[in-house]
Every structure is written in structure tokens, then in C-alpha cells.
Amino acid sequence: MAKKWIIEGRDFKLGNVDFHREFAKDKSKVIGGGYWHIDRVSNILYLYSKSEDFGNVSLADIIRIKHSGFYSLSLEKLEWRFSKEDSLDRALVLNEKI
Image (cartoon, rainbow, N blue to C red; front, top):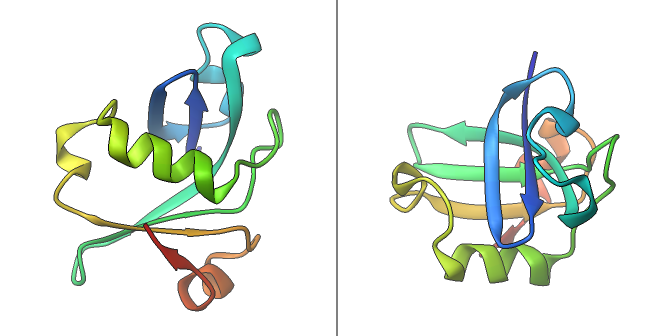
């Protein structure tokens, strides 16, 4: 299992799964996805890399989801950061604040 997320239509889905496709109700509506990490000390949600099943998303996709509010309320309190880097180590350094 790994920390993965997808954007399906207007919904942001995040959790621990083996495959990104496990989140999808309608695979034709999935825009893409990636991996996530929460820094509990700094209260930052890092979204990075891409989905092996659905590919990557754009910064604009992440901004749209962040502003739409179609995600868990617990994520609302976190600062969101996005990176297309494949490794968490690089994503922690090379990212954009949402």
C-alpha cells in the first residue's frame, strides 16, 4: 500500500491503496493523480509525482480542486504544495505553494 491520490471529475480522493484505480468510480472521469505526504510539524500537504494508472495533473487542476472544496475537511487546515517530481525528497524541495 502507498499514499496515493486522484482527481476524478470535481472530486479529490486521497488514501492508502495499492493502485490509483482503486479510488475510481468512473475511470473515464479521472484526470490524473500521484502520491502524497503530510508534514505534521509544518502542516503541509505535499502532492507529487504521477499516477501509474492515470498519469499526471497540472498545477491548474490542483488549484481548481483546492478552491472547489470537494475534499476532506481535515485537508482544509493544511497548506498545499504541488510538485511533478517523482521522489518525495525532491518534491519537498522543488514544489509550488497552492
